[in-house]
Amino acid sequence: MSTGSLKTGEVPDEAEVWDFLRRHLESIFAGDWATYEATTAPDLGLYEHFVTSHRIDGLDFHRFMIEHAWATREAAEWRFDLLEPCLQRYGETAIVSYTLMLTTATAEGLRHRSHNETRVLVRLEGSWQVVHVHKSPA
Image (cartoon, rainbow, N blue to C red; front, side, top):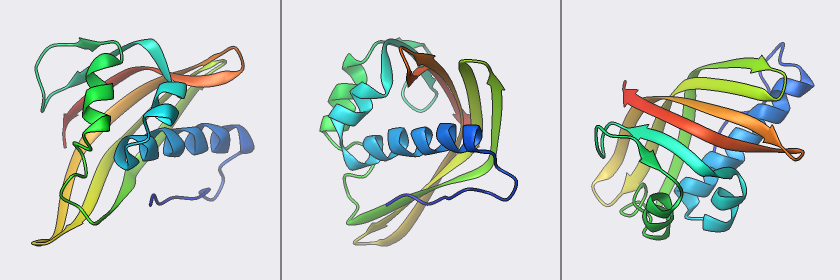
């Protein structure tokens, strides 16, 4: 249930990165651990301001969170939008930044949450992997 398509002026290499990112983000909200693990480096480092002020390393924390549907647990439906997306590409490294807005449909109605994200992607053995994430309040 994601949104987004090629933007005017987007070149195929950029489309590959954005398509990868959408698949990666969808895995989080859909509770798809297999896809998340396949798109994330085992030595992931991340900062999630709404969880703790310290860096969280590795995949164990996120496995627990994804398997328990932390992001969409009360929602019958969900969607996300990437506001003000920016891509910086340096060979086999891509840095994507945006404001992520998550909209969920709950028994109480629609809820919106947003925060700023930067994700660092590296192409390892021919496949993109998320190696670092930094989230901050929007």
